[in-house]
Image (cartoon, rainbow, N blue to C red; front, side):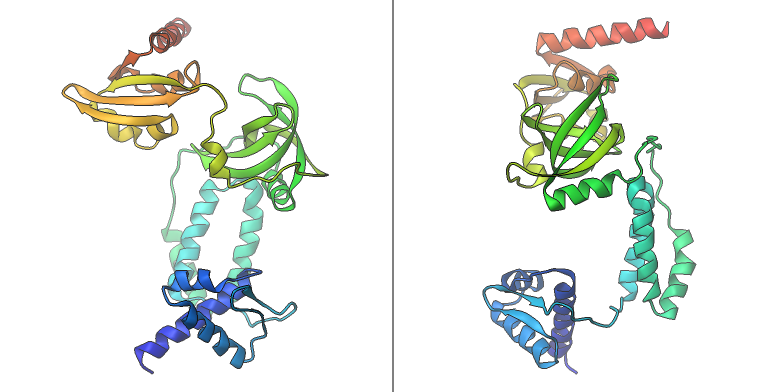
Length: 317
């Protein structure tokens, strides 16, 4: 069998996997994924149909498998098996505990369809991989919170939550969840708050109670990252002069706090930010490297930083 037919066999098998995993698969998406022409995809789909696979749909509208049609268990390559092991280690360290049991059950199903040799491969190598993190147990009181949140996103129904703010206040909110994201060792949800009539983000470990309601969303939403970029207040320009030796430690966080310009100077790196957290979040982040930074502007940031540092000194004397 020549290389052309081997590539076609791999591609047709991959298309079958796509049909198994998605309700609708477009020829255009498949062509982009496998870097071939749409006409090639049409021929591949025809190959599957000739092999007896009942495919519903047509060119231009998308394809799907006939409802109720069952295929034999998927066989995995050795590289895919190794990727599962690595993913499982990452999930154990970084997934929320409400997802842990579900993922473990899913991995058991994956293991059940592996060849005997691949099962031995897992047994021999899974203890040789570990992931170390500084994340500590947040002590969440709710064990099934993320599945409930994901169900509400999929079904587009509102949630009622009891939420504890960073200063200890407890409020009741009705929210429409746009999506979830993991950042700085915590899971967050981005949602439209019906009380505030605006978008808010909530840290999941601070949710004390959660209830899924039958009430539908009152509006349509885009992707979660679209709303994370939006401002909920007036932004203030802040400039810092930072020692070059600490710059490698700010690679990720400086963008999160609104970096818009970076310029190398003779005595350091000048960073310009636009932030709406000028009175709290931004100065608290600045405290972590304040001995290597000078506030150039605004004066209010310099005063707020001094105020925080004085309180720290008084507290620890």
